[in-house]
Image 1 (tube, rainbow over the protein chains, first blue to last red):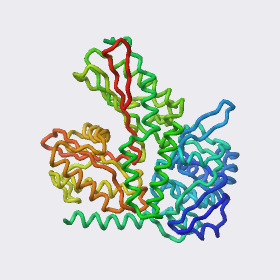
Image 2 (image 1 turned 90 degrees about the vertical axis):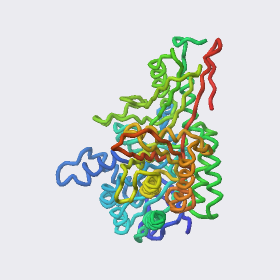
Image 3 (image 1 turned 135 degrees about the horizontal axis):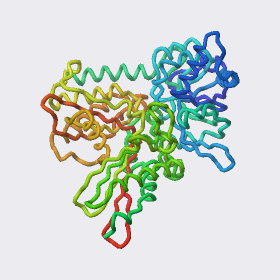
Length: 207
Length: 298
C-alpha cells in the first residue's frame, strides 16, 4: 500500500498507478456534489440531447472544473464570515451509493478522474473507473471537523438554491486524506469485504 | 418552586445541542480507542480509527460539529405535572434555529414537496420531540443527533422471515439483526451502535429502537436473556470482519442495546436503529425546586 500526493487536474497515468489500499493526499480545486447536483447534471447536461443547454455559462464552468477533476460527495456545515466569504466548518463525506444511478455517466461525460465519498459504489461506477480511467476515493465518514481543516479556501458556490448541503461548493484543498477503495483495474475493497462478510454470515447462521 | 411561565430554557437547549454536536460522549470515545488498539498496526482500519479519534478531539477543542451531518435532532423530554409542553417545544425549536445560525447544526430540514431547505432545522414535525410526564420534580432532556447515512441503513423486519429462517423468538431476532449489519456494510459509518426493538407496531418499534441508543455502552440489560443476546450479537457482528468504514477489520459494532414492547398477536417486528460511530447524545437536567432555574449537563 503506497502513499501518493496528487493535484487536480489529474492525468490518466497517475490514476492508473493507483491500487486499492493506497493512501492519497489530494491537493487543488475540487467540487462538492451530492443528490440534487447529480440529478441536475444528468437531466440538464448528460441527457440533454441536441436542444439548448440550461444555464450555458454554468455548463462551461462545470466542464472546466470537472475535466481531470474530482467530485466530492459532501454536504458541509458552512459559516459566512462578515466580509461575505464562506468557510467550511465540518465537511466529511456522505454515503455515495445513492449516486450509483448517475455516477458512471457523470464520470464519462465530464472526464472525471476521481470521486470522493464513503461506503463505496457499485458495478456501473467501477466499470466507468476502468474505462475512463478514474478512481473512487474513500474519506473517513464522520470526520467532519478534521476534513474541514484540509479545505484552505471556498472559491465559489454554485446552485446555492439547492440549499447548503446540496449546493456545489468549489473548494481548494490541501493534503485531503483519502484511501483508494475502487481502482481503475477493476478492484473494489467494498466487493472484497462484502463477499468475505457474507461467507462468515452464512457460517454464523448455519450454527 | 419555579412556575412554568418563568421557564426560559432556550439558551440551555442551545448549549445542549452544542454539546451533542461537538463533544462525543466519553464512553463512545473510550470504545473507539479500544477498537483502534485491536486493529493491525498500519492497516486501513487502524488508520481510520486514528482519523476518527483525532477528529473527535479537534471537534471538542474547536467546538465544531464532529460530523457535518448533524442529523435529525431527537429530543426525549421528561417533565413534571404543571409544565407546559407547548412552551418547551417552542423553546426547543428556537434553540435549533440558533444552533444552526452558530454552525453547530447543518440546516437539515427539507420540505418533502418542494425540496426547499428551511435553513434553520425547523419544519413540519422537525425536530423530533417526545414528551413524557413523570413523577420527578425536575425536567430531564435527552437529545440524540441521528445522521442520515446511518438512518438509511436502519431497517425493520417482520418475523417470521423465510429467507433468513428467522422465527418469532430470540434466535429469529439474532438472525435478522446480523442480516442488518451485513446489509449495511460500511455505508452507515461503521462501527455502529445498534438499537434494537422487539415488538410494538411499525411506528412505535422504530422509536423504541432509537431510544436504546441513549443507553450508555457499559450498561447491562436487566433482562438476562436480552443481556446475553446483546453480548452475543456484539461478538458475532465483529466476527463479520466489515470493520470501520467497511475497510475490513475487527470492530464492526461498538455496542448492541435491545428493548421490547408488547405486540399484536399477528405482528412480530424487529427494528434495527443503526447508529454511526458518532453516537451523539447529550442530556440536561433542570432543577425547579429553588428560587432560580438551575441547569446541569450530563
